[in-house]
Image 1 (cartoon, rainbow, N blue to C red):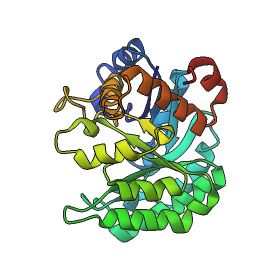
Image 2 (image 1 turned 30 degrees about the vertical axis):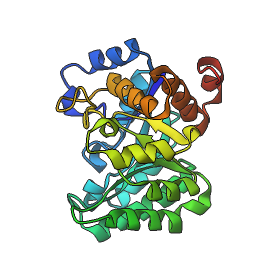
Image 3 (image 1 turned 135 degrees about the vertical axis):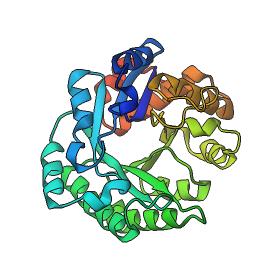
Image 4 (image 1 turned 120 degrees about the horizontal axis):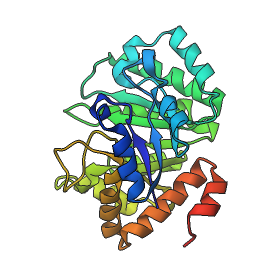
Amino acid sequence: MFVDSHAHLEGRQFAQDREQVIARARDVGVRNMVAIGNGDGPANFDCGIQLAEKYDFIYATIGIHPHEARLADQAAFDRMQEIARHPKIIAWGEIGLDYFYEHSPRDVQQRVFVTQMKLAAAAKLPIVIHCRPSRNGEDAWDDCLRLIQDHWASKGIGGILHCFTGNWSQASRALDMGFMISFAGNLTFPKAQQIRDAALQTPLDRILIETDSPYLAPVPHRGKRNEPAFVLETAGKLGELRSLSQEEIGDRTSRNFYIFFKLAEICESKVPAH
């Protein structure tokens, strides 16, 4: 059993064969997927819900990505508050900071990030974090972790550092604030030793796996469109690092997912204990 905890299934890259992509994932043992509800911004952050309503094994999130922070307004925040009540919404995200592209000004990104943490706290939903530093340093990590510490950590709800790209020090700070660390296909990239070092040190019961489809396809699919079935490659690499089989990593990270999101009945019925 495997869970793809983060996929942009609504993307135009899947427009021609979305059903087949989802079927391929199920065929190789991906029992659940999380459809990330960012879309292209506030106009369609309900895109994940549309998929979650169609497939009972898909869950969804809502949130305004830092790229589109400049588009956020009170009407968008109000609408998200309403949508957050949907039973298939399990998290708020992905939200955070992106200083690499800076499609939105940094101060706007920070303001919208803090606002969404407040909304997520009111909805009692964990947050899914996107953090990408500039080309010249780790500035986004410093700001992101500081804002989480100041505006979120005390809520006791936790969250996920999705597609983790940082170092062990940053992962450790997030773990101390109740976060899960999610690893994606870039774990398999030859130059990603920093990520592999963090994956080796992160406690196994705090790890999730994801694809971030359609982005960051793992080796041996690198350069192609990513899809949820490829989460098995990330599980395999993680197993190689931890001296466990691909299947054991799948079972353990699935259990982590169900426990973190309080999907206990699924956990007990589908995931074997180790």
